[in-house]
Amino acid sequence: MEIKKTSLHKLHNEHQAKFVEFAGYEMPIQYKKGIIEEHKFTRSNSGIFDVSHMGQLFIYGTDDLTNDLEKIFPLDLKSLKKNSSKYTFLMNNTGGIYDDLIITKLDEGYLIILNAACKENALRILTKLLNNKYKMVLDDERSLIAIQGPKSVNILNQIISGINDLSFMTGNWFSYKDKKIYITRSGYTGEDGFEISLPADKADSLARQLLAFHDVKAIGLGARDTLRLEAGLCLYGHDLDESITPVSAALAWSISKARRKDGARAGGFPGDKLILDEMNKASATKRVGLHIEGRAPVREGAELVDENHQCVGKVTSGGYGPSVEAPIAI
Image 1 (cartoon, rainbow, N blue to C red):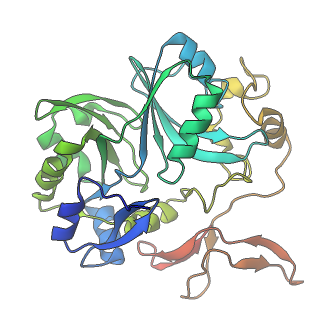
Image 2: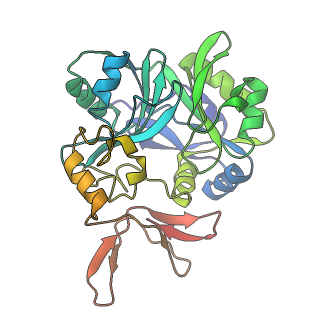
């Protein structure tokens, strides 16, 4: 299979990136100074991440589409305001997770950001569940750049005015070099930041403008992983998969009140009975964060045992937390 490259591949090379293959793409895992320095820099300044390998799925339609998507996602989409985003799941009939995603309501429909390794399968599932009723475009002609860190808003606003008016999990269309770009105030690092969807032929230009600021550096996927781990955010294929429900993943907060038991439109989505029962009772398993004694990280797959040496769980994500200066795990 041919390995794909994003529109920022040349820029990554110029910054001496170390590459890995991920979800069919050659992606930067780190740059010259390494993961720990990139992590700390993002926490105190601003880092840009190439996340163009992720899926940008546009679904076009209005009221009927909203009704049909409520049969798929455990969300109150009818109450979701235009240009607002929600975190949610594409699930199977037993409540297991095919993908965790961000959905944003647009004037003309919805934008769904899918995980890179899941996007083709998610498109097939959504096409089937929606019975080919709507125009759906998994747009590979657009890039996705994340800028994350406490200085991001001031930096990005100098290039694209008005983004400082966005609140968390909202977005809007803006103009960059006479092209429409969509920006949401969101990210997956635990920091304030933005995700920028733009035509692929404009991505290199914007990335270079951002990197011209002293407080901005290119950050690889390695630091993105340590940043999200410190923030307690799940990584699909590790902390989430088709056997894990949102409740057992400690993500029940993301299920809209209107879709819970006694809600205005309770249930009606895949796996609803099992999930709603788990919310009222308890799931058999539960995701928790772990603080590790000593300095040695505990890696994914390690079993957790009780005082009788009985297995009571396993590590799904683990590593060193550069900000907390200690090993941490989920």
